[in-house]
Length: 95
Image (cartoon, rainbow, N blue to C red; front, side, top):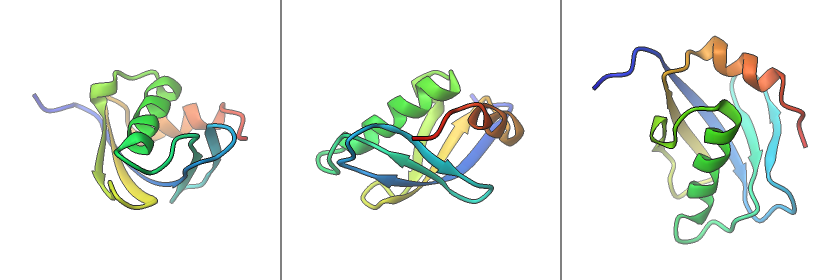
């Protein structure tokens, strides 16, 4: 089933941080700190969990499209358009 609304985000992660959360965001890159290490998919799972909770979408709607082994990732968010995503992010207090 194809989603009606789709947003693709460029996300830069900072694993092994003391706190997890959104550090900063611009029109081109969202920087996210994660407590988990970048091993065995732990940081990727934490990224999906964080975006799911911040954006209030089901986990199945958050997909890492590219960059599963790097710090720079392309993430697809189904059922939210870009304007909705950035409206939500504007209300999130950065770390």
